[in-house]
Image (cartoon, rainbow, N blue to C red):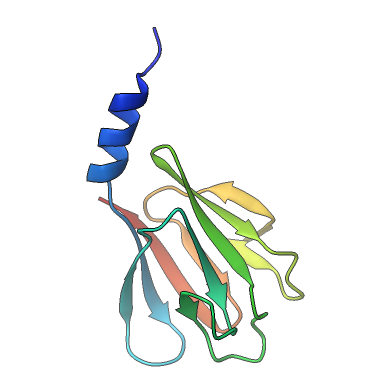
Length: 110
């Protein structure tokens, strides 16, 4: 027996996906991943902005898929580390540590 689409929508609306910046430019910050897709990078149109020259303009995408948050490297030059391992894409889990350029984030799910 599967989960209904209505249940998935309700869980998605109640589940909060967050990034907590613990290292990098500026003070620690909490960022809500509250759109279908958000981009992290140096570009002016990036929803999550980094100033490091080591970051690509559109370095990584965060996509909400059902109740999951999926992180996808946009074929960036310096890549993305998830829990110390270079990855292209992954479904994020609470407590995952993400390294992008000079910044470190912890993924939180509430």
